[in-house]
Length: 311
Ligand code: TXA
Ligand code: MG
Image 1 (cartoon, rainbow, N blue to C red):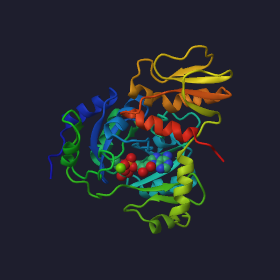
Image 2: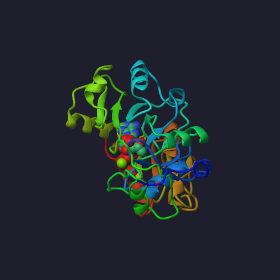
Image 3: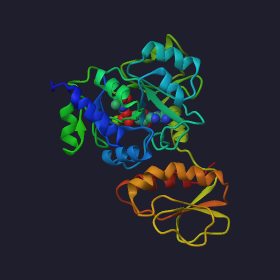
Protein backbone atom coordinates (compact mmCIF):
# COMPACT_ATOMS: atom_id res chain seq x y z
CA UNK A 1 0.00 0.00 0.00
CA UNK A 2 1.31 3.43 -0.92
CA UNK A 3 1.66 6.39 1.37
CA UNK A 4 -1.44 8.49 1.77
CA UNK A 5 -1.22 12.04 0.47
CA UNK A 6 -0.71 14.78 3.06
CA UNK A 7 -2.58 18.08 3.30
CA UNK A 8 0.21 20.03 1.64
CA UNK A 9 0.14 17.65 -1.33
CA UNK A 10 -3.61 18.13 -1.65
CA UNK A 11 -3.12 21.91 -1.66
CA UNK A 12 -0.48 21.58 -4.36
CA UNK A 13 -2.78 19.37 -6.44
CA UNK A 14 -5.60 21.90 -6.07
CA UNK A 15 -3.30 24.71 -7.19
CA UNK A 16 -2.21 22.68 -10.21
CA UNK A 17 -5.81 21.93 -11.21
CA UNK A 18 -6.86 25.55 -10.76
CA UNK A 19 -3.93 26.59 -12.94
CA UNK A 20 -5.13 24.34 -15.75
CA UNK A 21 -2.79 21.42 -15.03
CA UNK A 22 -3.47 17.71 -14.68
CA UNK A 23 -3.32 15.58 -11.54
CA UNK A 24 -3.86 11.88 -11.11
CA UNK A 25 -6.02 11.14 -8.10
CA UNK A 26 -7.60 8.08 -6.53
CA UNK A 27 -11.31 7.36 -6.62
CA UNK A 28 -12.94 4.35 -5.01
CA UNK A 29 -13.02 2.62 -8.42
CA UNK A 30 -9.70 3.36 -10.17
CA UNK A 31 -7.21 6.25 -10.38
CA UNK A 32 -8.32 9.09 -12.61
CA UNK A 33 -6.32 11.52 -14.72
CA UNK A 34 -8.07 14.74 -13.79
CA UNK A 35 -8.27 18.25 -15.16
CA UNK A 36 -10.61 21.24 -15.04
CA UNK A 37 -13.76 20.11 -16.87
CA UNK A 38 -14.62 23.74 -17.66
CA UNK A 39 -11.44 24.16 -19.69
CA UNK A 40 -11.12 22.90 -23.27
CA UNK A 41 -7.35 23.22 -22.93
CA UNK A 42 -7.11 21.09 -19.80
CA UNK A 43 -9.36 18.47 -21.40
CA UNK A 44 -7.25 18.48 -24.58
CA UNK A 45 -4.21 17.84 -22.37
CA UNK A 46 -5.95 14.79 -20.89
CA UNK A 47 -6.54 13.29 -24.34
CA UNK A 48 -2.95 14.07 -25.32
CA UNK A 49 -1.55 12.46 -22.16
CA UNK A 50 -3.64 9.32 -22.66
CA UNK A 51 -2.52 9.05 -26.27
CA UNK A 52 -5.95 8.10 -27.58
CA UNK A 53 -6.40 7.84 -31.34
CA UNK A 54 -9.98 9.16 -31.03
CA UNK A 55 -12.03 11.30 -28.66
CA UNK A 56 -13.96 9.17 -26.22
CA UNK A 57 -16.11 11.28 -23.90
CA UNK A 58 -14.86 11.60 -20.33
CA UNK A 59 -16.57 11.27 -16.97
CA UNK A 60 -17.06 14.54 -15.10
CA UNK A 61 -16.65 14.33 -11.34
CA UNK A 62 -18.45 16.71 -8.99
CA UNK A 63 -18.83 16.95 -5.23
CA UNK A 64 -22.57 17.55 -4.89
CA UNK A 65 -25.92 16.94 -6.52
CA UNK A 66 -26.43 20.70 -6.74
CA UNK A 67 -23.27 21.04 -8.82
CA UNK A 68 -24.36 18.23 -11.13
CA UNK A 69 -27.68 20.01 -11.63
CA UNK A 70 -25.86 23.11 -12.87
CA UNK A 71 -24.62 21.19 -15.89
CA UNK A 72 -27.12 18.47 -16.78
CA UNK A 73 -30.86 18.19 -17.20
CA UNK A 74 -31.96 16.53 -14.02
CA UNK A 75 -34.99 14.30 -13.73
CA UNK A 76 -36.71 12.20 -11.11
CA UNK A 77 -34.75 9.08 -12.01
CA UNK A 78 -31.46 10.93 -11.64
CA UNK A 79 -32.58 12.28 -8.28
CA UNK A 80 -33.50 8.83 -6.95
CA UNK A 81 -30.29 7.19 -8.17
CA UNK A 82 -28.13 10.04 -6.89
CA UNK A 83 -29.72 9.82 -3.45
CA UNK A 84 -29.22 6.05 -3.32
CA UNK A 85 -25.82 5.61 -4.94
CA UNK A 86 -23.84 8.87 -4.66
CA UNK A 87 -21.13 9.32 -3.60
CA UNK A 88 -20.32 6.04 -5.32
CA UNK A 89 -19.43 4.06 -8.38
CA UNK A 90 -22.44 4.97 -10.50
CA UNK A 91 -22.01 7.28 -13.49
CA UNK A 92 -25.14 8.78 -15.02
CA UNK A 93 -25.29 9.97 -18.61
CA UNK A 94 -27.68 12.92 -18.84
CA UNK A 95 -28.44 15.62 -21.42
CA UNK A 96 -26.28 18.74 -21.22
CA UNK A 97 -28.16 21.83 -20.18
CA UNK A 98 -28.42 24.51 -22.84
CA UNK A 99 -26.16 26.80 -20.81
CA UNK A 100 -23.80 24.01 -19.72
CA UNK A 101 -20.34 25.44 -19.06
CA UNK A 102 -18.52 22.13 -19.22
CA UNK A 103 -16.01 21.70 -22.02
CA UNK A 104 -17.68 20.27 -25.13
CA UNK A 105 -14.48 18.32 -25.67
CA UNK A 106 -15.16 16.46 -22.41
CA UNK A 107 -18.44 15.34 -24.01
CA UNK A 108 -16.58 14.60 -27.27
CA UNK A 109 -18.98 17.02 -28.89
CA UNK A 110 -22.12 15.16 -27.82
CA UNK A 111 -25.22 16.60 -26.18
CA UNK A 112 -24.79 14.51 -23.04
CA UNK A 113 -22.47 14.34 -20.04
CA UNK A 114 -21.39 11.36 -17.97
CA UNK A 115 -21.27 12.54 -14.36
CA UNK A 116 -20.71 11.15 -10.87
CA UNK A 117 -19.75 11.95 -7.29
CA UNK A 118 -16.81 9.70 -6.36
CA UNK A 119 -16.68 8.12 -2.91
CA UNK A 120 -13.07 8.77 -2.02
CA UNK A 121 -11.91 11.36 0.51
CA UNK A 122 -8.99 12.54 -1.65
CA UNK A 123 -11.13 12.94 -4.76
CA UNK A 124 -13.75 14.80 -2.75
CA UNK A 125 -11.10 17.03 -1.14
CA UNK A 126 -9.82 18.06 -4.59
CA UNK A 127 -13.33 18.74 -5.86
CA UNK A 128 -14.34 20.75 -2.83
CA UNK A 129 -11.12 22.73 -2.40
CA UNK A 130 -10.77 23.60 -6.09
CA UNK A 131 -14.48 24.28 -6.54
CA UNK A 132 -14.06 22.77 -10.02
CA UNK A 133 -15.80 19.94 -11.81
CA UNK A 134 -13.03 17.50 -12.81
CA UNK A 135 -12.96 15.54 -16.04
CA UNK A 136 -11.13 12.31 -15.31
CA UNK A 137 -10.80 9.19 -17.40
CA UNK A 138 -8.96 6.26 -15.90
CA UNK A 139 -5.29 7.19 -15.57
CA UNK A 140 -3.88 4.69 -18.04
CA UNK A 141 -2.47 5.13 -21.51
CA UNK A 142 -4.89 4.24 -24.28
CA UNK A 143 -5.35 0.49 -24.60
CA UNK A 144 -3.84 -0.32 -21.18
CA UNK A 145 -5.74 -1.47 -18.14
CA UNK A 146 -7.04 0.89 -15.48
CA UNK A 147 -4.72 1.69 -12.54
CA UNK A 148 -5.79 0.70 -9.04
CA UNK A 149 -2.80 2.06 -7.12
CA UNK A 150 -0.52 5.09 -7.48
CA UNK A 151 2.40 2.97 -8.69
CA UNK A 152 0.42 1.82 -11.74
CA UNK A 153 0.04 5.46 -12.75
CA UNK A 154 3.65 6.45 -12.19
CA UNK A 155 4.76 3.39 -14.16
CA UNK A 156 2.91 4.62 -17.25
CA UNK A 157 3.27 8.39 -17.17
CA UNK A 158 6.38 10.52 -16.98
CA UNK A 159 7.65 11.86 -13.68
CA UNK A 160 6.14 15.27 -14.26
CA UNK A 161 2.59 14.06 -13.65
CA UNK A 162 1.55 14.60 -10.04
CA UNK A 163 -0.05 11.48 -8.58
CA UNK A 164 -1.90 11.79 -5.29
CA UNK A 165 -1.34 8.53 -3.47
CA UNK A 166 -4.44 7.18 -1.78
CA UNK A 167 -3.32 3.58 -1.58
CA UNK A 168 -5.28 0.80 -3.22
CA UNK A 169 -8.68 1.61 -4.80
CA UNK A 170 -11.29 -0.31 -2.80
CA UNK A 171 -13.59 -1.17 -5.74
CA UNK A 172 -10.90 -1.70 -8.36
CA UNK A 173 -13.14 -1.73 -11.45
CA UNK A 174 -14.56 1.27 -13.23
CA UNK A 175 -17.95 2.71 -12.34
CA UNK A 176 -21.22 1.37 -13.71
CA UNK A 177 -22.51 3.70 -16.43
CA UNK A 178 -26.26 4.14 -16.83
CA UNK A 179 -27.65 6.09 -19.77
CA UNK A 180 -30.57 8.24 -18.66
CA UNK A 181 -30.88 10.15 -21.93
CA UNK A 182 -33.51 7.64 -23.03
CA UNK A 183 -36.43 5.83 -21.42
CA UNK A 184 -36.04 3.16 -20.32
CA UNK A 185 -32.52 3.72 -19.10
CA UNK A 186 -29.82 1.32 -20.28
CA UNK A 187 -26.54 0.19 -18.80
CA UNK A 188 -23.58 1.20 -20.97
CA UNK A 189 -20.88 -0.30 -18.77
CA UNK A 190 -21.18 -2.84 -16.01
CA UNK A 191 -19.51 -2.34 -12.65
CA UNK A 192 -19.95 -3.08 -8.98
CA UNK A 193 -23.45 -1.62 -8.96
CA UNK A 194 -25.45 -4.08 -11.04
CA UNK A 195 -28.66 -3.95 -13.01
CA UNK A 196 -30.68 -5.47 -10.18
CA UNK A 197 -29.46 -2.73 -7.81
CA UNK A 198 -30.76 -0.06 -10.17
CA UNK A 199 -33.97 -1.88 -11.03
CA UNK A 200 -35.14 -1.48 -7.45
CA UNK A 201 -35.58 2.20 -8.25
CA UNK A 202 -35.93 2.73 -11.99
CA UNK A 203 -36.77 0.75 -15.09
CA UNK A 204 -33.74 -0.57 -16.93
CA UNK A 205 -34.14 -1.51 -20.59
CA UNK A 206 -33.18 -4.97 -21.67
CA UNK A 207 -29.50 -5.35 -22.30
CA UNK A 208 -28.88 -5.89 -25.96
CA UNK A 209 -25.31 -5.25 -26.89
CA UNK A 210 -26.10 -4.79 -30.59
CA UNK A 211 -28.71 -2.14 -29.97
CA UNK A 212 -26.66 -0.41 -27.30
CA UNK A 213 -23.58 -0.38 -29.44
CA UNK A 214 -25.49 0.87 -32.44
CA UNK A 215 -27.31 3.65 -30.62
CA UNK A 216 -24.17 4.50 -28.67
CA UNK A 217 -22.33 4.87 -31.93
CA UNK A 218 -25.00 7.11 -33.39
CA UNK A 219 -25.17 9.30 -30.36
CA UNK A 220 -21.46 9.54 -29.89
CA UNK A 221 -21.13 10.91 -33.37
CA UNK A 222 -22.61 14.32 -33.24
CA UNK A 223 -22.59 15.42 -36.83
CA UNK A 224 -23.10 19.02 -37.85
CA UNK A 225 -26.11 19.73 -40.05
CA UNK A 226 -23.86 21.19 -42.70
CA UNK A 227 -21.83 18.71 -44.69
CA UNK A 228 -18.08 18.71 -44.20
CA UNK A 229 -15.53 18.87 -46.99
CA UNK A 230 -12.17 17.67 -45.71
CA UNK A 231 -8.64 18.53 -46.85
CA UNK A 232 -9.97 21.63 -48.58
CA UNK A 233 -7.40 23.70 -50.44
CA UNK A 234 -9.88 26.32 -51.58
CA UNK A 235 -13.23 27.58 -50.36
CA UNK A 236 -16.36 27.41 -52.51
CA UNK A 237 -19.11 30.02 -52.62
CA UNK A 238 -21.35 29.80 -49.56
CA UNK A 239 -18.97 27.63 -47.57
CA UNK A 240 -17.67 28.39 -44.11
CA UNK A 241 -14.07 27.55 -43.30
CA UNK A 242 -12.61 25.58 -40.44
CA UNK A 243 -9.00 26.63 -40.75
CA UNK A 244 -5.77 25.21 -39.38
CA UNK A 245 -2.70 27.41 -39.60
CA UNK A 246 -2.69 30.16 -42.20
CA UNK A 247 -6.31 30.34 -43.43
CA UNK A 248 -7.27 29.96 -47.10
CA UNK A 249 -8.18 33.28 -48.65
CA UNK A 250 -11.52 34.51 -49.85
CA UNK A 251 -13.65 33.36 -46.94
CA UNK A 252 -16.35 35.21 -45.08
CA UNK A 253 -17.12 32.91 -42.19
CA UNK A 254 -14.13 31.34 -40.57
CA UNK A 255 -13.01 29.75 -37.33
CA UNK A 256 -9.34 28.87 -36.91
CA UNK A 257 -8.55 25.74 -34.89
CA UNK A 258 -5.03 26.98 -34.33
CA UNK A 259 -3.22 29.72 -36.18
CA UNK A 260 0.09 28.46 -34.82
CA UNK A 261 -0.72 24.86 -35.87
CA UNK A 262 -0.72 23.71 -32.28
CA UNK A 263 -2.48 20.35 -32.10
CA UNK A 264 -3.67 20.68 -28.51
CA UNK A 265 -5.14 24.09 -29.17
CA UNK A 266 -6.88 22.65 -32.24
CA UNK A 267 -8.35 19.77 -30.22
CA UNK A 268 -9.53 22.18 -27.55
CA UNK A 269 -11.35 24.27 -30.16
CA UNK A 270 -12.70 21.51 -32.40
CA UNK A 271 -16.23 20.83 -31.18
CA UNK A 272 -16.98 24.39 -30.17
CA UNK A 273 -15.90 25.75 -33.54
CA UNK A 274 -17.78 23.08 -35.50
CA UNK A 275 -20.93 24.13 -33.69
CA UNK A 276 -20.28 27.83 -34.22
CA UNK A 277 -19.85 27.33 -37.96
CA UNK A 278 -22.83 24.99 -38.19
CA UNK A 279 -25.05 27.57 -36.47
CA UNK A 280 -24.44 29.95 -39.39
CA UNK A 281 -26.06 27.34 -41.68
CA UNK A 282 -23.42 27.45 -44.43
CA UNK A 283 -23.75 25.47 -47.65
CA UNK A 284 -20.93 23.30 -46.34
CA UNK A 285 -17.99 23.53 -43.99
CA UNK A 286 -14.63 23.34 -45.72
CA UNK A 287 -11.97 21.93 -43.42
CA UNK A 288 -8.30 22.51 -44.07
CA UNK A 289 -5.91 19.58 -43.92
CA UNK A 290 -4.75 18.64 -40.44
CA UNK A 291 -1.54 16.63 -40.08
CA UNK A 292 -2.18 13.09 -38.90
CA UNK A 293 0.09 12.90 -35.89
CA UNK A 294 -0.34 13.34 -32.13
CA UNK A 295 -3.80 14.67 -31.32
CA UNK A 296 -4.23 15.21 -35.06
CA UNK A 297 -5.12 11.52 -35.35
CA UNK A 298 -8.08 11.94 -32.99
CA UNK A 299 -9.09 15.20 -34.66
CA UNK A 300 -9.06 13.59 -38.12
CA UNK A 301 -10.94 10.54 -36.82
CA UNK A 302 -13.67 12.82 -35.54
CA UNK A 303 -13.80 14.94 -38.70
CA UNK A 304 -14.00 11.85 -40.91
CA UNK A 305 -16.96 10.56 -38.91
CA UNK A 306 -18.67 13.93 -39.12
CA UNK A 307 -18.03 14.05 -42.87
CA UNK A 308 -19.26 10.51 -43.56
CA UNK A 309 -22.45 10.23 -45.64
CA UNK A 310 -25.61 10.11 -43.52
CA UNK A 311 -28.85 8.26 -43.90
O1 TXA B 1 -14.72 4.57 -12.40
C1 TXA B 1 -14.67 5.37 -13.31
O2 TXA B 1 -15.65 5.68 -13.97
C2 TXA B 1 -13.30 6.01 -13.62
C3 TXA B 1 -12.97 6.93 -12.45
C4 TXA B 1 -11.70 7.72 -12.67
O3 TXA B 1 -14.06 7.78 -12.19
N1 TXA B 1 -13.32 6.71 -14.85
C5 TXA B 1 -13.38 6.07 -16.05
O4 TXA B 1 -13.33 6.92 -17.12
O5 TXA B 1 -13.48 4.87 -16.16
P1 TXA B 1 -13.03 6.42 -18.63
O6 TXA B 1 -12.83 7.66 -19.46
O7 TXA B 1 -11.90 5.46 -18.64
O8 TXA B 1 -14.35 5.77 -19.08
C6 TXA B 1 -15.44 6.59 -19.33
C7 TXA B 1 -16.47 5.89 -20.12
C8 TXA B 1 -16.05 5.72 -21.57
O9 TXA B 1 -16.23 4.39 -21.97
C9 TXA B 1 -17.00 6.63 -22.31
O10 TXA B 1 -17.33 6.13 -23.55
C10 TXA B 1 -18.19 6.71 -21.38
O11 TXA B 1 -17.64 6.66 -20.10
N2 TXA B 1 -18.86 8.00 -21.51
C11 TXA B 1 -18.42 9.21 -21.10
N3 TXA B 1 -19.29 10.18 -21.43
C12 TXA B 1 -20.30 9.57 -22.07
C13 TXA B 1 -21.50 10.05 -22.67
N4 TXA B 1 -21.81 11.34 -22.69
N5 TXA B 1 -22.31 9.13 -23.23
C14 TXA B 1 -22.00 7.82 -23.24
N6 TXA B 1 -20.87 7.30 -22.69
C15 TXA B 1 -20.03 8.18 -22.12
MG1 MG C 1 -10.74 3.83 -19.09
